[in-house]
Length: 91
Image (cartoon, rainbow, N blue to C red; front, side, top):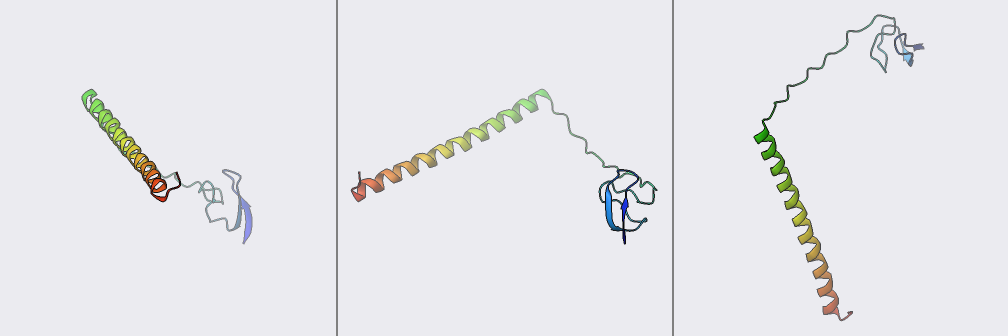
């Protein structure tokens, strides 16, 4: 095995043969180009104005619920700490 510099992207490939593919660009090291893989993009459905507004309101509603829950948990934690200190007589 030997080191071969890719003729397409100039990346150094170690322990390869000319029939192998380049680690960086994927083309063959003997100069033959491999057809690029075409990725199929899925169509994104276009939402109407009413649907976008409803979606945004739902996202805001969920964010507010999470924030309210976090505030309740923090307040309960603080209250628990205060009660523990008062009951132990360290206040």
